[in-house]
Length: 115
Length: 111
Image 1: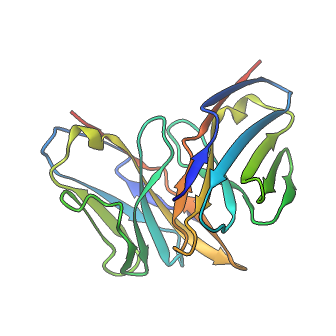
Image 2: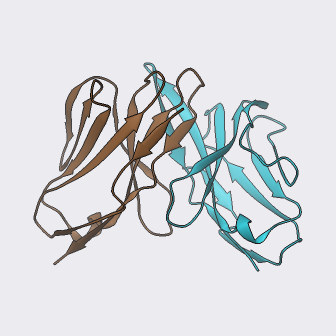
């Protein structure tokens, strides 16, 4: 079974530039998450989708971050404009609920460096 | 609110046993996850505990005590490839699957 796919794997940009990340979840997984993981910390949730609807975006800095999942499959996360503190790994995860247990499966992440 | 604490780093010897502890404070409880994350890679699912006790999966076991807000991950017969960060995570109660992660425990396995 193919896992969660993300691209690009690495991105270097200058502050105030824009950047977009793409995620393709595991086939059939209705729930998709974007996390931000700063070096030395655990992942922090940015946004959660259920199919093409937003379930929770309370932790998303909406002045500069946006995300969409228009057809309920692939998702994109955008940062515009980027700040130095946005340097992190951006992880996409999708989940499946089996017998009441929801398990999240993570993609390889996009490592962003803002200079 | 929710809070998760785990040690920042641990060192152990190849072939030995290591226990990585995690304490949590949550309003409500929906289970606890352990993930393994190698440097530069995605977290991979190791275990899920929702009832008290020990769950064993090969060389890895996970223990939960809900009354104490405590879990541990036990790694036996350590191998060099077990060097990784181990993340403890709990779902936000009644908020779907949103996971709150601890900072991770960086385990170094030495020969």
